[in-house]
Length: 424
Ligand code: AMP
Ligand code: GLY
Image (cartoon, rainbow, N blue to C red):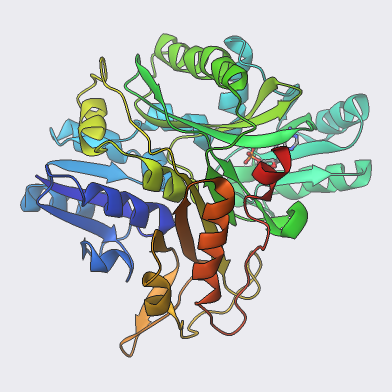
């Protein structure tokens, strides 16, 4: 069977890497892909938002399964389009992907189906939003309703900051139409974890636990990014936390979506805040996390393709996923200036040296080819991912890989995985 992966970042490189190992798969294509992906699959020069071209390609190439990485094509309805044409595709339909595309929708859903989450209000006008801020006090969290590439969340320490964020968003200056509505919510404290599950709308298979590192600098300082590193398993997800997340978050959400007439198929990613063993939900994503996908797929022992096919067929019953006992850690290497304006086009050196290390795989996120060389081409450039017998060993091995790679202005966090060590 031929498989098409849609997207071109680190998550999609990991998906291609895993899918290409399946004995069921004869060839993998990736649209648009990237130079790293091109070593395992055929890159197809179609952007992820060119849905009609993707459909034409899948039809003419006889693609047996399409796997969608990013949220944008999902929220544009790529799954609806492919399914209408009888093509198999993994991911939620548009009316289910709204769980990520609208924070107001997902908060209302959580409230309706008793999924634990922060107290909140949804506003389209400044005056009632101000009144809510005054009632709640600070710190307080202001979120653009729509997709904002992980940047639409402001944690305001003062009333002034909160009101300014609301005004910026509602005026359309900050995030365009994504900010036409805002969600304002209670500030939660605790430790975050990424809890991902694969579901066919009824059956739910949880993936191994993971933790992301959202802030740009060590010690969770500085502005939020798409994610500067991740590891799995995450010890903050104790067996009791896992049970709560499954019963109170995943089960209620999947059943709630079905009851709303929006059956959810695909990966459902719950961003959790865990405090003293109690779980609350920060957000949902309609896809694999990036970079969480990289360590998760390196730890996945089972062939992923039959699971993805079963979801596309709507029948996950009786399936399971096996995991390697080893831990995995992914350290993201980013361009100078990221997550603000960043420079690209710098030649990357040391990729071949890093590839010589055992149990290390370098996933490409934002790379490009120039004059036969691999150069930086995005904010997050590489995800150096390693397996180890323990999280500590996986951290050490990942940083051995990182130390072999460099370019002018490279930046990365030195403390990926530390939270896991501090708990033990
Ligand atoms: P979101 O995209 O909604 O997950 O928000 C991005 C990040 O903002 C989260 O990963 C948290 O670090 C932070 N965040 C979001 N909502 C809250 C909240 N209610 N309390 C504290 N931090 C939050
Ligand atoms: N790493 C966070 C995300 O994928 O949204």
